[in-house]
Amino acid sequence: NAGVTQTPKFRILKIGQSMTLQCTQDMNHNYMYWYRQDPGMGLKLIYYSVGAGITDKGEVPNGYNVSRSTTEDFPLRLELAAPSQTSVYFCASTLSGGLRNEQFFGPGTRLTVL
Amino acid sequence: GENVEQHPSTLSVQEGDSAVIKCTYSDSASNYFPWYKQELGKRPQLIIDIRSNVGEKKDQRIAVTLNKTAKHFSLHITETQPEDSAVYFCAASKFGGSQGNLIFGKGTKLSVKP
Image (tube, rainbow over all chains, first blue to last red):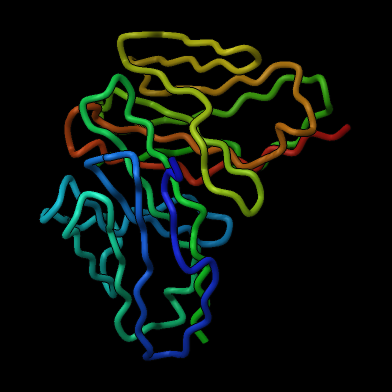
């Protein structure tokens, strides 16, 4: 299993541009998450999904959108990028109903908005 | 909602010494408390977790203790080694509810000096 994969690894955007961060997991996990991690800070939840077709806002959803058309994929869309969105973005997944609630993280996407 | 406070923000120890990181949580309904380790430039990875029906859990050199009454839990690392140097995050959630959303502390940067 590849686990959780993310693309791209790095990206530089200009203010006002848009982009989609891709996330795919091959563990048949039903729950998926998007976090952002600012320098020296913890992880803040942007959006999450409990299954295909179902998404919900987390702690910091403004400026982002998500979709979940399949179990495997959970892309994060940035519209009108702003410098405040400069961060490292992590996608994660977990299998609900298990004995533990371990979230498996992708390698991250480092985004800079100039 | 849940709030997780983590202390200290930085911790420096000599190789072989013990390290203790403490977290407090606000929601008494939280019942699952994982600890994640994040090495520089890498993704967070689960190192140990504890559920609220257990007061202590140990895995080789790491242990976690939980005090439900006081709503705090701690990570203990004994016989620290240079490879233990990383940022450690605690988290809390309601296992089986709230879609398993983890609320993270802001992290502790542990430096182990050889």
